[in-house]
Length: 294
Ligand code: SAM
Image (tube, rainbow, N blue to C red):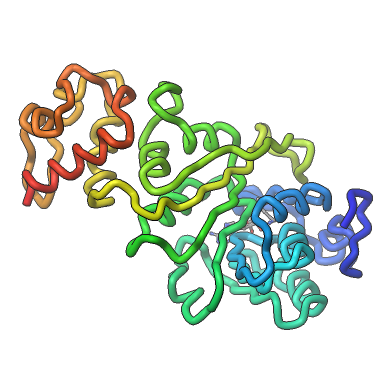
């Protein structure tokens, strides 16, 4: 594919697809479409090499990234789209790549991902330009999935730059470091690959976007994900307060824990704040909380 609108798959330029099928972007669905084939190709290559790989895409829309993934050699793309207006355009893509595109009409928030990919042989990878309004909820769901290692071998996802920074943050970036950074750091190695300016989208969003790569850790530090989430929620909800204060009221298995006892058991100073505790510290807190709440 190239950037002047011509494609090597014989399908019309994306602007024409959007006009033909009257796909005026809807804000409520987080629709900011990519028309630049160089850019969709770059995102698809970031997910590659794709030979033998099944790619799960959320929100194919008019099919720009979908086409790039197929052109770059994905064995198969399973695309979950909520907007039924996009289905006719996606049917054209499916016809251009026989047997390689499965479009699922539905809500990504309600999707049973394991069932979706059940029976597929070979690696499964997530690649998507996510609707900005549900991006973090979807990511948290994929990171919290059990059993682990998960059903995907890698995630290449586009978020708003500010969200991307929170995903890759460590205690060194205090302002950005929070629940999402702990969850992502616990289960994956995350990094920002490149930025995408607002002008690349139609309509242009207000802010810059970033493509993030998340590679699942084979052996995350042992702890219960739900308890880790409860601990980080409690700690970061009052991020300016010391942990001896912010962890007060933390309950595990219906039992309210003694914050001082918990911090002592985890070997973490009671005067520390959430943003000073790294992922290993939170995993230890979650393990101790589970012991004390059990
Ligand atoms: N992939 C296309 C592209 O890059 O041009 C469109 C990306 S656009 C940012 C987000 C897409 O997600 C839209 O097509 C929108 O309809 C779809 N979407 C929004 N909410 C969804 C949901 N809950 N489940 C599935 N798809 C959704």
